[in-house]
Structures are given as C-alpha cells and as structure tokens.
Image 1 (cartoon, rainbow, N blue to C red):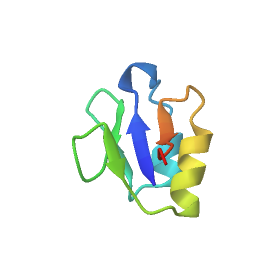
Image 2 (tube, rainbow, N blue to C red):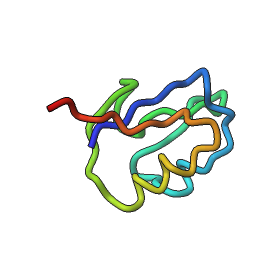
Image 3 (tube, rainbow, N blue to C red):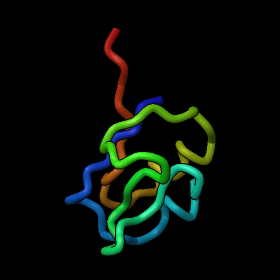
Length: 69
C-alpha cells in the first residue's frame, strides 16, 4: 500500500506515530515524516497499524494512494 504525506496539513497531534511507530516519525518541529525515508510517498505493508494511523489523522495529512488499474 502506498502512503502519501501532505506536510502542510499536519498539526503535529502525534496520532500516526502512536498508532504505527514503525512507520511514522517526526521532524524537530513535530511535522510527520516516514520513519525510514525522507520521501513524501512510499510503499508500506498493508497492516492494521498503518491503516489505522492513516485513518486516525484528523487533518488528512496522511492518505492511502489508490493504485490505477
């Protein structure tokens, strides 16, 4: 599953890191980033933790990118 970060929407609430700490981390200013890469779009396993983290974001700063068929 591909996850996209929209940093300008992030309010540094911490929910994504709480739900999926193996996937999400934070810059020094509290804005979300991926734990393993500086990219804004990346493929991750479709785990319950990752799905919950994306769906928990109150500002939609995290999105699941739909695959085009």
